[in-house]
Length: 366
Length: 181
Image 1 (tube, each protein chain N blue to C red):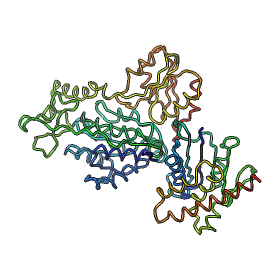
Image 2 (image 1 turned 120 degrees about the vertical axis):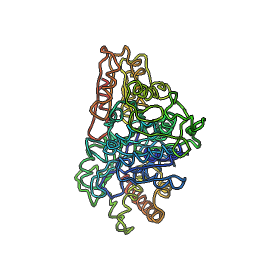
Image 3 (image 1 turned 180 degrees about the vertical axis):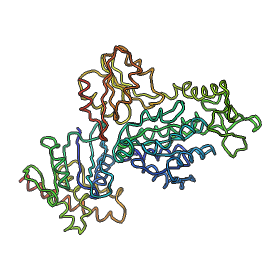
Image 4 (image 1 turned 135 degrees about the vertical axis):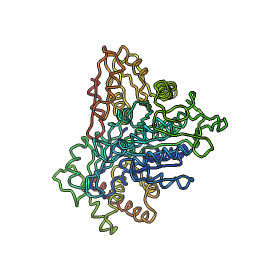
């Protein structure tokens, strides 16, 4: 059925369809509609919505709910996302499935509440202290707000990781014609198949689709943000620390094929490659259509882990790579890391709350 | 073909709702490709506000108006800012009560005055304006707008808005008859 739906509405609808049954949040423009819809709809499906006192409490509440077995989510924007960083790191360390939606607005600080940006791209990767991999997805329109919210919930449950959905104001408040599927497949976390006495919460093979227990199911779970052994109790010895860090890393690195998601429009005659994500990719693709030159194009839907290998392969032998984005050049850094020195990097940035125009990208393609 | 419509004025004039109704009418009931976007400040009323609808028969990549075909301005600041951005041979509709201009190519329409005088409520200026657009530009059918209003407007106000739409449609028809004769 054709419907006119906004990005924020699509995100909330997908979250409910994906089985999210707890939302702890603190409303902030431009993400507020997600919280509003969840507040309205969750009680109708037996779920719980709590407006917490701030974003620190919000992230900790969804970690608690998820550890108790309930698929959980929050939604915020820049200032709230900053406050949530410690909690996101805690979720990574304790291996709890949560989805954090960040509808990016202009910054720094309280910045531009009603205007968009892509300025939290690197923050999503490096915002927490310590060092652990993250998963972040970026939709370019309303239909993808739906599909990527579903996917964010699924990844979080399969890998027991926090997953960040990087939307932005342009997309959150944009309405497009969409047609959502009548049925969606939902992955439910596996229950442990061993007796409580044999259960290890952080088992070495606890990776893709691994079973894990929730609080209240009769299994002993020790929960700590301190570096820990497989039973969750804190440790201080180097080999165990390495073992645990390696687990966190392997969860992402061993599953790159599952996580990677790009839209690629290659052209063997093109000497120019565009690399973009999210709303800036729309301006970029429009520019690609407006020029008569052959242009190769890659749009990352999963931005973290970054698609290093794909960017490297597509950039190889090309004269230049054009990177349009709405921040001060954060994606360009990542692309530069992947391409050789023989390829020129052209960074096209805009960071004033307005959408990059096709014309601005077109100039770089000349 | 890509048609870009920009509805502009002050916060509180219902421009975002008008954009949603127009987009839904074209996109859902006439099965065209549409994208509706908006831009407004942090204040609830009084600041600058605009809503844009891009209508196309093809997939829409860039969602904003960058070469507007149709501008509606319901305030002087909106008119001053956006009128110069309309494409050549584009249409500019401005509210005759709130906007003053010497430009002869601007279509000054009594949107807010008619809403006040004929419907007793200035608040329906937005929907009345959509009726005018439908009659004067043909970008959307009256019937599609009616369906969208029934879906998007709170039930208690549907009747009033449908009246406003009809009044606007007639106003647009008369204006166009005058212009073409």
